[in-house]
Length: 396
Ligand SMILES: Cc1cc2nc3c(=O)[nH]c(=O)nc-3n(C[C@H](O)[C@H](O)[C@H](O)COP(=O)(O)OP(=O)(O)OC[C@H]3O[C@@H](n4cnc5c(N)ncnc54)[C@H](O)[C@@H]3O)c2cc1C
Image 1 (cartoon, rainbow, N blue to C red):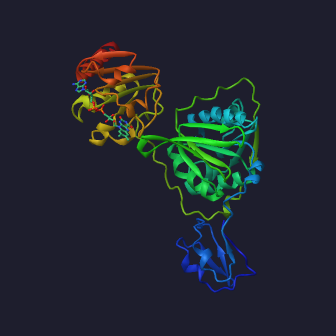
Image 2: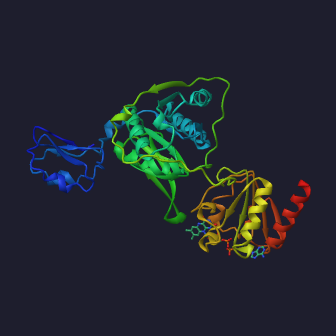
Image 3: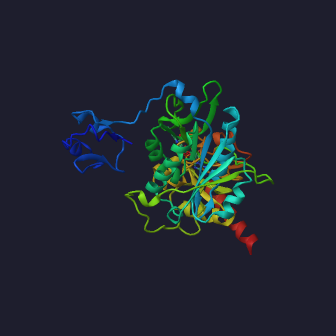
């Protein structure tokens, strides 16, 4: 937070119009900063008496040893812990070990989650930091950012991870700004450099054309969001060894700009490709946009979801949230059926770790066959129609 020295402030009001976010106000003749502050520093230089100071963002290297432990954000929906949190549990434990056996903390924001937390105790975390409040039941970016940032300030962690999910992407950058650190979004690999305990953060950059390796050299915690399904999930043990640490947070004192009015559930029957065990993906080889309807029918009969190549998404045959690949989703289903997809390297980046890959392509030399466990050389839609007909017959 920007700080204003009241004794030095002369009440000239020059800072008030200088703030682009309306974060400064006059209280009893002195300037005061409110929750709208984004630390942009626009007010600092305008002050004629140097009463305003920005938070010290650059730490001296010797300060870094005070920051200890790895934290993960446990994402919940309707009180149910989401799979990405268990992936972070496994990754967080590995990073804690690489940091010389430091503690792993799981941060949970929610309400009435007793059973879920009881189950979470079986996972390899040391402490579960739980902030419980009815207002935290539903996700609210502003509220979650304030509460989580408040918790992080108490814990002085070396590393903090969250999922690069819709929720993580929408509020973790605010948390990073509030605690005055950097954030590497959408990481696909993370390692701790032994000597300095720097987190080496790897993520695709420039549309996936190169992998950027990023280090947060002088800020703590080192924050990263992590792609779903890139890391395995932690395994539960029989013992419930993690300790729950409840934290109370004065939510009433927060001045929030956002209010959750209603949560609209996803379209009924739609399975998210990140969660699906079976994915039926269409490439340009399916011929035309309408044919995605037949792929949807096949996916429905198999209990799976529909994926797509970027070429079909760019051609507006189907929405972006179906795109698999370097600039789309990374998936690891049990069965991936690629129909009329060439198997470009950027597509393979998002699906090649699928357990079983079936590819259908009329070109026997299509690169998709290099990663396929079962290769079917033939016409895309003939395959789809035959599959649908056989599945319907077997269901009769
Ligand atoms: C920076 C960057 C990022 C990218 N990110 C992604 C990404 O995230 N995901 C992604 O998918 N792509 C991505 N791409 C695009 C990628 O390079 C390919 O262009 C794209 O994957 C091709 O899609 P496609 O296989 O549907 O189309 P095409 O390359 O046109 O292939 C169509 C295939 O269908 C076959 N076919 C044609 N007719 C039939 C038929 N009747 N029956 C059976 N088979 C048939 C053809 O033999 C061919 O193999 C990216 C590209 C760049 C440069």
